[in-house]
Length: 142
Figure 1 (cartoon, one colour):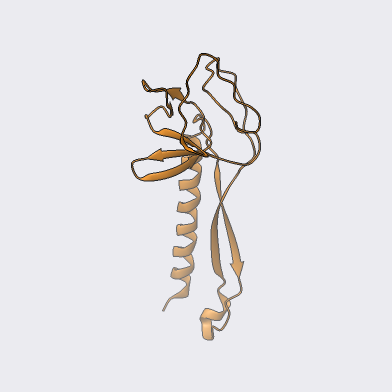
Figure 2 (tube, one colour):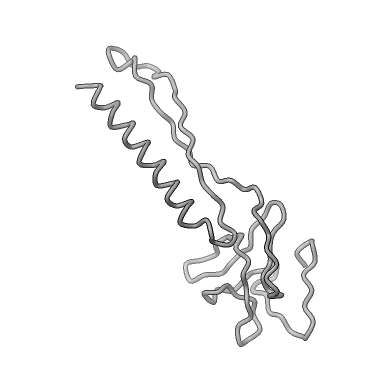
């Protein structure tokens, strides 16, 4: 086996993964609540390999997400919410519960707090239904 070709193939694969991450970050840079991802490549000494292959390190790839808070912009919509610190909004979708930090919500005709695509925002007791004329969102999430 030609190990030089194998090393080139691994390097090309890593470059493609880096490009995918960069393109995804650029494409979503204007998306509210988006958290950039970045790749980490670590080289581990090849353990237990003998012969010419023992000289080539193996690479370990992990995808990390940057959870630092982004810039918060006041929109004037009472249902646009931002999270400070850790945590996610729980959203009920047709595929099940998903988690997001994107907080541009609205009310549907039945008074449920929903995403722009109409999926319901969940609280401790299920979907959040808002009634009344005055709505306050407290720092603790209540």
